[in-house]
Each structure stands twice: as C-alpha cells, then as structure tokens.
Length: 90
Length: 129
Image (cartoon, rainbow over all chains, first blue to last red):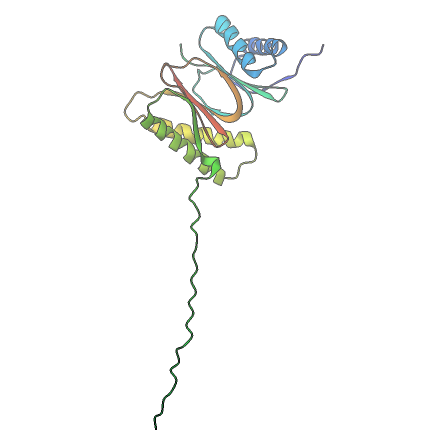
C-alpha cells in the first residue's frame, strides 16, 4: 500500500519535530476518514509527545489568523485536506 | 322669445398609479446565524457586526481563491477583535473562517463563539497567555 503524499506548505518547526508531526498525521490519515477524528487523534498524540497544548484544524476550505508559539507551527496538505497544527497556551 | 344655451361640462378624467415599495430584505450572504456562543447578547452582536463588515470588505476586494477569501476575512476580523481589547491585557485570539473545517483545541472557558455570516462560518476563541 502506497503512503499518502503529504506536502508541507508552511512551517517554522525544526526538522525532527516536523518529521514526528508528519508521521502522526500520516498515522491519523491511515486510521480515520473523517476530518474531526483526524484532528482529535493528532491533537491527542502531540499533547502526549510534546506537551500541551496543541491546536489542530483540518478541512478542505478555510482561512485563519491564530496566535502560536514560535517554532511550533506547520501547515500540511494531504489529499486536498489542509491540516494546520500549532502549539499555544499551557 | 328666450335664448337658452345648453350647458356642457368638460370631460375630466383622472389617472392614478400606485407604486409598491420593495421590502427591505438583508442580503442572504450577510445573514447571521449563531450556532454556539459563550458571550452575552451585547458582545455577540458586536462580534457578528465585525464579522459581517469583514465579509463585506473582502467581497469588494479581488481575491483569486476561496481560501484566500477566508484568509483575508479572518485577518480583518481578528484586527477588530484585537482593537476591542482596549487597555485590557492582549488576548490570544484564534480565528478560523471557512465552510469546511474541523477543530480540536483547548480554549479558555467562556471564550468560544461559533456562528455564520451567510455561508461563511466563524469559530473564535482565546487561549491562556
């Protein structure tokens, strides 16, 4: 089974964390079909691995203006679905 | 001998026309719907007004894609939220705008609002500093 292509559209993460985040997203895409389930899985995993609190937005069509910690933002595109992930708050 | 002239009255016709005023209906793309809010009525009205203004402003601009439209709306709307803080400690607002998105996040208690202006959905909340 071929892996879904994940494109990094924007990020300020360092490579190790970025790679870990991508692997979590890939796992979520493999396990779930519904965006809200993907978002829930990714958030839970990242809170465990990197500490609270992560925000995850999944969807085909949205824009945003958010506050986030430097070095903790990434915007991915996977099969027409955008996945925006960032850390903010305790 | 008497001379009498028959009296004649002019034929007077009148014409009246009535014009109907068109009902003042708000454009559908600017109608608001509140799905969920933690805010009181007064504050939610302000939020909705700022969102409507943001949508109107961006409609008048030339944007190439739908995502770009939502991005511009979010930026404009967030500026309104930030400017409303006044002397208060700046809040970390999170603004998501679109018609297809799901969110998993932690928000401060009492700061969530989810509403729509036409087909454009807005989710806003703040997080701890």
